[in-house]
Image (spheres, rainbow, N blue to C red):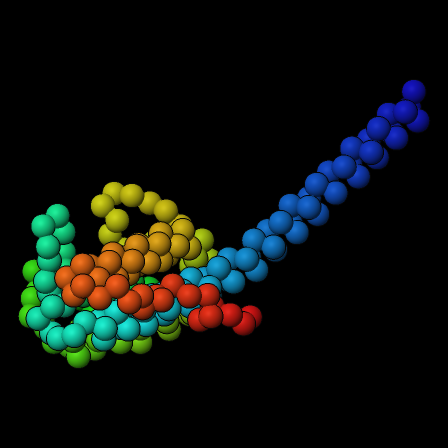
Length: 198
C-alpha cells in the first residue's frame, strides 16, 4: 500500500512539475509575444499615419479637404487632425512628450492647409514611435495610465484598439475624398508592404 501511495505521490509531483514548466513556458512565450505585438502595433500606427498623409496629398486643394456632404459629419481634414491628436496624446501619456490634448479642438478646427495637416501627422509619428518602443513588458501589461472615462484595460490591448480606430478613420477619409472630389482613385492606404520584414 505504501508503494502505491509513493508512486501516486511521485506521479502527482511529476504532473505538477510538468504543469508548472508549461505555465512558465507560457509566461515566457507571452512576454516575447507582448514585446512583438507592441512593435507590430507601432509599425501599423506609422503605416496609418503615412496613409493619412498620402490621403491628404491626394486632395486637389486645401478647401476640399474640409468639405462634407449630407450624411457625413466629419471632413477628411477633421479625421486626420483627430487621429493625429489621439496618437500625440498616447505619446504624451506613455512617453512624456509634453503634448496637451484638446479633443474638442480636433473636431472644431477648420481651414488648415494640407501642409499644416501633414505637419500634425508628422508630429504624431515622431512622438508615438519612441513612446511605444520604450515600453517594457510590465508597462504593456499594466493598466493604461491615461484617463479612460472609468474604464481599465492593459496598455497593450488599448494600443491595439487605438490602431483599429486609426485604420477605421483612415478608411473613412479615403471614401470622403472620393465623394467630395469625384475621384475614385485609391490611395492604397492599408497595404502589407510597410509591415514586411521582422
